Length: 452
Ligand SMILES: Cc1cc2nc3c(=O)[nH]c(=O)nc-3n(C[C@H](O)[C@H](O)[C@H](O)COP(=O)(O)O)c2cc1C
Image (cartoon, rainbow, N blue to C red; front, side):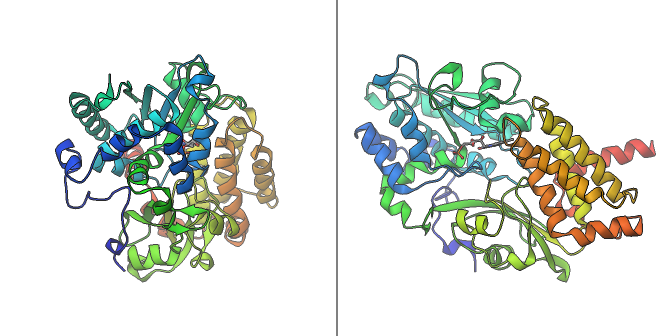
């Protein structure tokens, strides 16, 4: 079943037009939603977002309209109101915001303007991952065109409403995708999370009311305003409305981003659309929402890709990144790579995360190299338990949850490492094929250093 059978909403038109160009975007109706929104009461725009049932695409899945409704109205505050867009996209396996910025940058800008207007903001910040250089250039060029056309800046489209958009580059820290660390970083401070409450909606950037949303969430706003919240809500399934740009990777024939209605099954995505597992291998495990989410097994293949169904299966839809893992992969090696990533990215502010991630790596390394003792798996689970829910931000959970799930669901494989005193997979593990190109490059450099 080719993905083109499904209506695209966020990436609509991008297959047939070069939507990085303002003239092409306008030809497919671009910026008409902004015109429409500017002619509506702010509350009426918000009502459409509420009716759409759009849930945040950054990870937590909080309803977008409800979060916007928590921001004080301009008449209720003397402070400026900010909209901050999270384009930091660093969760391993996730690469959909990248494609949205590459292909439909004006939809993101239009969504930013409509959302800013809705909450009574005159200032938007887009915090873009530092490594996304070409995406930065594309969005910057699109912003310049939009400014020249009077869509951004003073007196937007003659409405009397002003709105600036600042594009800010991150500097390579995963933690800066966490919303409060992102705000710290934007303020020029070290990117570390704040304690909540107060939530950003009341005290965010420069202690002022701030709405923070993901790129995909914001890029979904123009079609919702164009066709109405009820129209959008008809896609997907109850409690998980609309489409989602799923990033499919790992041991799968046709990896890539696929915009599909929520509620499609893992089987349809991996086999019908993704072409299945290459080389005649069997599916062994599935990471359903980015590396921080608990792993599922091949038995979960008929689970629907919506918030509730993935939750009932014991995991989370997270950032919508699905990683297929074949039967050659060593789950201990996978757990090690994931734990190493979170150890490296822990900002160090909370002791359970800073120390616990190091403990996790040490224990898993011992298991993988055949130096673990009986009891070390329980020790590992106990370390996970001491991190879970005990940190200021969910990075600790993001590290502990997947590792605990690998042990829970593949315990026999972990135990075999201990019993045999070595990795039963050795070099035959297919793990390299689920490493990102960046990780493979880093590994190559390490190997070259050893040879030299
Ligand atoms: C460690 C960590 C990293 C995160 N990284 C991102 C990210 O790169 N992009 C993103 O949109 N959300 C990320 N989030 C989620 C944000 O904190 C926040 O929930 C999101 O930007 C809200 O947007 P949404 O409601 O539109 O999903 C991260 C959260 C954590 C705990």
